Length: 437
Image (tube, rainbow, N blue to C red; front, side, top):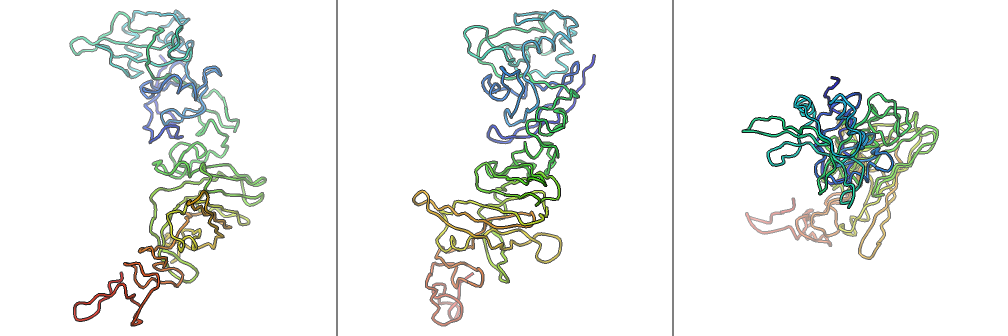
């Protein structure tokens, strides 16, 4: 019998549902079709599946379920399920949606060795999954199931007299059966790469770029440069840009946009943006020849890292700066993470001299728009100077130093001129002691 197991190529997240997906179970190839395990889709309803794998359009999936990208897979129909079971049975007895029963413990054992049981029903282990005939809850012709069952006696698994059945059932069970045909040559997105080897079957990506090596093509990867998928998905995106036409890549939330003009690239390239979460909140800055202290409020990994452009491209960033004081808002800039000491490791954020404007829209919400020209890719961030005491005087920024960072002192009084603000002077230990950090 032509049955084998292996891990499917499509494993990663396209973030339809919240949270990270767990890896799919090993798939099973039966009679030339590769099947996913129904156990991976418990809890997903008929309507949820139909939104991604339209039954009326033949069940071809074009998105994600439970965080797993099913693009290029097909939601099994009644006929597909009949064909699957008939292969094991060796006949064509199953041919319609009515209930069928086959009496063969040997065949049941073979199916159960290939497909994992997903439900415990009384003293049975059962595999069940939606097919695409009818919506759940229909008053007539409920959705059909492929069902495989076995009965347990005294803790030992034996097969009942109705081990393999295909039947119509009511209720609100969930799950699904999905397959694809390896080597079929089908190419849904018309990018020249067959579905079964395409790392992003639903979107044309002839370069097949997978910058983080997680098996999901960048155009189908919610976090293109983060294999752990812990980025901000709304602040991430990927797109194809060509040498001849250029291209524009914009994050889902619209807060970062890259505009690449024709001729900027030496070759057609997949461009990706990944907004890292919690990365480098406090950073060392270089502003001209001056050092500084900063805090990143948006951090982006642009790939391919180090990509050089024939001429500079436009980077535009929007960010909510309502939580900043007016002094910080006036000193916004886009910085690039660079190797400033030549040791091969990026160590400081260098100011790029972006043009930034801040608008109050709506009332009491401040939105900054910053634009800059860049000649190569790296890590970029919107960075503000640190102001520990929120007095409008930056800790250290472009030659400006707060003489008392521990206490608000906007006037910067320093009676004895020693560089330590009066607000940070206290008596003790034989004389004044500056408590400025």
